[in-house]
Amino acid sequence: MVQPIVPYARQLFLCDDTVPRERGKVDFLGAFHSVSPSAYPFTLEKMCVVAHLSGGLGTVNTYVDIRHARTDRLIQATVPREIYLPRRDYLIRVVHKILGTEFSEPGIYLVEFYCEHGRIAEIPLTLRPPLTKEVL
Image 1 (spheres, helix red, strand yellow):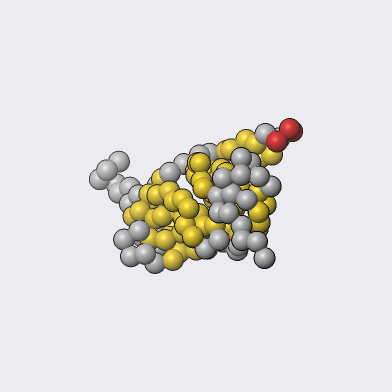
Image 2: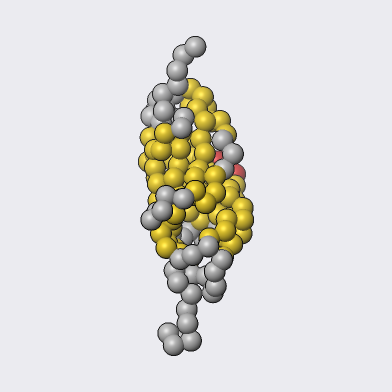
């Protein structure tokens, strides 16, 4: 069996949602890199992890892990899904929608994008401390 060639990530970002349009266009709604909850624990109801990949070849599996940066504790993982890259110069956009991620405390969380069980990209997500009345 021929082994696939793992792609590399050209871009990785987070947003609230995606809306497909005609001719392969996509609208990305609510791009973010930090969240300001009013209290903890906090549940982020929906998040999309968008990756632009190229340089790969064949069928590869992808998934996303979210980890607390300080402790490396796994917060959530997506179900693996296969993508197909027909040529090395092919650019593919992959969106993993993540529902109901619970964060127990403020801090930095790493959103890690995996391909064939190897991390090929990550982006930090900052969960800020809740605002207190003194700060307001």
